Image: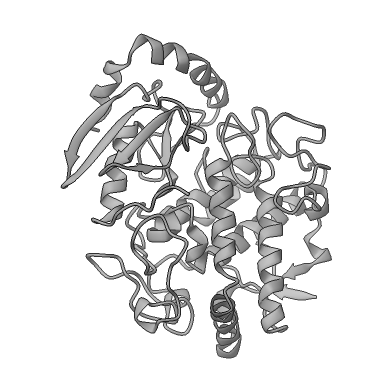
Length: 275
Length: 130
């Protein structure tokens, strides 16, 4: 059983194994499909039409499954690897170890936001961006530009305190835990972090930046934490509802996994600590 | 906020089209306020899609207009072009807008969204929508 750890606690070898496995998937031509899938869903998930991966109740189980699939792909390269998470309430600056040369590399340079350090730098030749919104084929970041501050621990606590999982109209205007965690309402957690990193993380092709996985792993952990704190609450809606995925409805693109299948993460992995 | 004035350019047709969406948004945001990620209040005052524009912004030609139907208008009946290439845009239930290059940061109007895309693109050309 894999244990997902805080990236700040990884040993040098654990960091190297994770980075190498990600690079290997890219080399094998298996990475970019994740970027395509994510973008395909994010541009077709609409507030008034069918929505599966984003702005809808299944935002959390969809991404849990998406991360599981990626993690299993990493493990096919190196069985000892599990996804690390980035606790952005603690590691809040461009100086954090996450952005060091032995992990994800640093901020983009001024002028064109091109990442020039670490394993995913353009100059290294290992990380060409192929599924992209525009002509630039290099990883870009602009840490702390689009929004100055990452969410705080108090911000997260305020969202974890929300009792109800989700509510009609089950989209980006909903009240409830899911939409405040996703960030269209309330203090804004998930969306804000995408904007804080900037560059490709701000686009529909955000998995082009490997920090996507560490960010979403923390979002996944916060969902698990909410479940722990609210044992009498659960996924909503439980019955068939137009345009959104109900508890026992299979999610695209897998068509064999329901939100109910994803509720207990301990079937697949555990986290190193509670929030 | 330079876009505020454009709300007055709404046509009656667009206002009627947007009325249902605006009502939904009003209900959805009755309790919880929203500070947008850029510090911009993201609860739009009303539908901004009626804002037709065609201007040069930082050297790029940006155009926006109601879509004529067909094409790649997931979640939007509005088309934004940058140097003639379509920018994928989407309207949120509260009337705000996002695009493929600013997907997690709502903007008040399509024009503001197009300008933000120009800044983000730093001169790069959009890849045609697949």
